[in-house]
Structures are given as structure tokens and as C-alpha cells.
Image 1 (cartoon, helix red, strand yellow):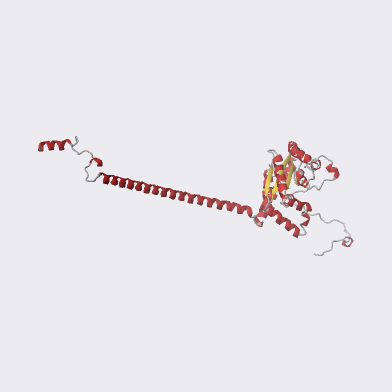
Image 2 (cartoon, helix red, strand yellow; image 1 turned 30 degrees about the vertical axis):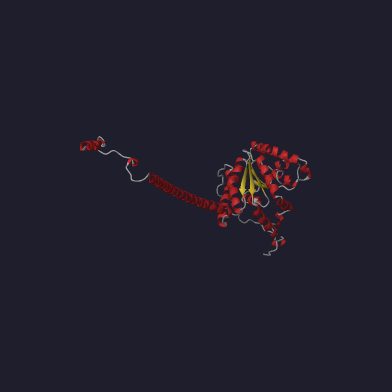
Length: 350
């Protein structure tokens, strides 16, 4: 009997002499079937809670990663906001008077060089200045023309057309003011009056307005084919800045002449002028004859930007003549001048 038991125990060993793996269910147990079921349920609940805890930990890690990403994004947003704020501050602040005068002096010297070049090469330059009232067109024109020879650079500021001019071809009175060879013409408002004030105020018919938009690009291209260098500027000013400048003109007797009843009526039709400008750009902002918009809320900055851009539109060289040596004054000759009492002098009040 002992030998049989030994053989049975040996047969339970595997080939390597180790006991085979036995599943927990195969192990003998003193538990009843009900108790076994309860223990299985407890074990399943424990594993379920463990997996739930693991999932919670994963969710927490994901939330932390999301928070980190949010922090990074917020930092980037703050940096961008800081940069954009710096840019907006730059736009909202005008440059200092010292820097303005320094840069204006430098640009005006370049304008003189351009003048010599235009005269020497027999060029024809026409520059149009358009924009809302009090946008700074006149100030920019003054800074360009004040350092140039008035025989070479002329300012064209036409008034209300006469009855005779109204009966003419619309572009006729402007064509007469175009530059000849070796001249620069600065138009303080131009033929674009028809697309702006005439349209909004009803000074032209709808048919005349439509015909202008159709023929204007053709007219400008014709001028360019004839050799005229055409540059168009639109001075853009905000509602608030325009109102400030209007009030300044009202309070200053030396500037009050700049403000006409038409300007006040135009301000009352601000939106209509905006629409007219947009329609005008849509029809006349061509590849060959584009519009150049000048941000004009700050006069100093607008003037410098406009002059700098104008210089970049025309290729020119330095033809400044050499320095002039003053000759000696004429020596005295046998001539006796009449008494000073025979002349009428202006009273010296100052």
C-alpha cells in the first residue's frame, strides 16, 4: 500500500521534478459554496475599485497637463497682448517735436534732391491728396512745398466750378492744371470730388457719378501712358480726432476759415461719406494707379510717413549743384544816391 501511495505522489510531479501549477479553484477549501461566491464578489469589487482609482489618477494627470497647457497659452497670450499693446501705444502716441523736426529736415533735403532730378530729367509728377475734412492734407502739402521752388512745385486747390466749367467735360479743368515737363503738381483735392462730396451732397446726377467711376481709371491710365507719374493719397482720420480738430478750428480765429458750413454738413453724413469712399476705392484702386492710405490721427507722424513714401515712388539721384562761392561786392563808383527822405518807409512799430 505504501508503495502505491509513493507512486501516486511521484506521478503528480512533472518531468523536471517540480509540482505542476494548480489553480485556486482546484485547491481544496473548507469554505461552503455560498462563502466562495461572497469571496469572489469581494475580490471583483476590490479589483473594480483599484481600476477606478487608477482611472481617477489618470484623469488627475490629464487635468494637470491641461492646466499646464492653459498656463502656457495664457503666458503666450499675455506676451502677445503686451506686444500688441506696445504697437497700439506706438500708434496712439505722436512722435516728439524734436524727432519730428529732425526727420522733417532730413526728408525735405531729399525733396530738394528730387526737385533737381525732376527738373533735369523733364519728369511730370502729379500727386493727389484726398481724405475727410481736417485729415491733415493741407499740412502735408505745406511741408512738401515749403522747401521747393514754387516755379517747379505748384499747389492746385480749385474752388467751386463756374457755370462755364460745369458745361465742360468733367476732367477738363483738372487737365489744365496737370504738370508740364520738369514740374510737380500737388492737388489739394482733385477730380475725386465727384465720387465724394458731389455724390453725397447731390451736386451731380447718378448717371454722372456712374460715368465718372467708369471713365476715371481710363483717364488716369491715359495720363500714365503719356508719361505722368501719378501718386494718390487718402488721409484717414477717426471720428474723435476730426471732432477735436473741428473744435480747435472753431476756437482759433486764425483757423476758423478752414471750417465751412459744408464741412459741418459732411460730418453729419459721416456714414454716407464712408460708403462713398469704399465705393470709390472699389472702382479706382487699380494695379496701375493704386490708392495709398495715410493714417492721419497724428499729424507729425502722418506728414513724415507721407513724404517718405512719396520719395520712394520716384527713382532719383543726387544732382545737387556744387556749393556757390559769393563774388566780391562791387567797388564804389562815382554815383550819388538820392536823399532817403524822398522814399516812403513802413513805420517801425515793432
